[in-house]
Image 1 (cartoon, rainbow, N blue to C red):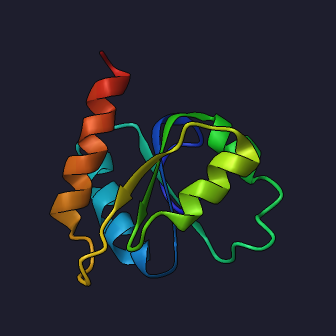
Image 2 (cartoon, rainbow, N blue to C red; image 1 turned 120 degrees about the vertical axis):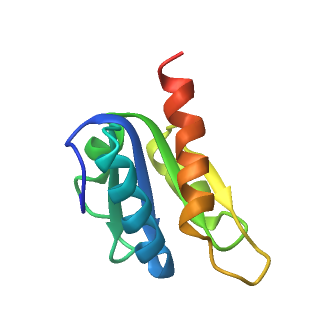
Length: 112
């Protein structure tokens, strides 16, 4: 876990080049008082031993990727969770504003 509470509403799980945008988006939402956390995988094979336990401690797991969603497919298959994806494949990085908006959609869903 890189930042945020040990359990809560939304966990944003990333790997690779999404680190910076996830970090800044989660920091902004934490400052606003939201229950959101950031975990970043340093490697994907093998996954960290405690990853399954970590994923289960959040109501929603959001996986932003700058591709067609390869990581989310592996996470769903291996851990049998209904992770949510946010994919951008237009050749430009995800912006903080885009990611904050996407995370807020799931924060609203959790509290309805």
